[in-house]
Image 1: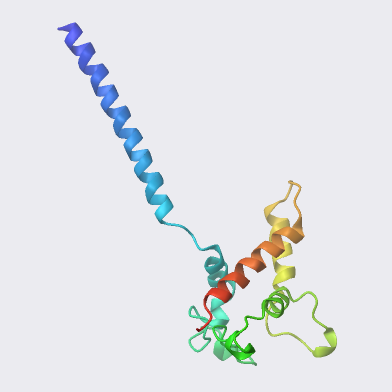
Image 2 (image 1 turned 135 degrees about the vertical axis):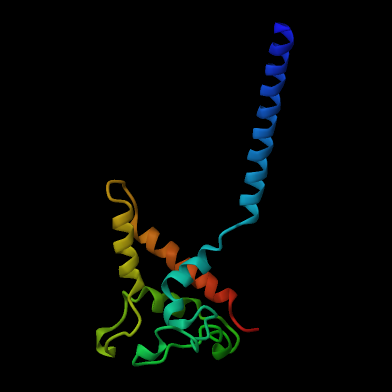
Length: 150
């Protein structure tokens, strides 16, 4: 009887181990199906409030509070003879190179904002703040490129 109980316990342990492995693989497969679009995430966190979730700016929550209406971000290429203006978009988002003589900006200077966030994130660790800023801006630029009207 004791031997039978030992065999049952051993078999039960194997079944639970196999079940745990299957659950782990299933969870990993499910997680891969749920890929995060980092550019879209960045856009929703920092741009959608003024330019709307769809990028067209018509239904943006802050639209009525702005002095200058936000632009439709889905027609940037269309307004530039079918070519997406990567450099211009990057410079507008970064904002740190803006000429003061052109007046104040309605849009936040995200290059500076991202630098501050990088410093908060990497308090005691070595990091390259410019790489952090460029990465976040390039995520946004890529997302904006992908939402252009065809």
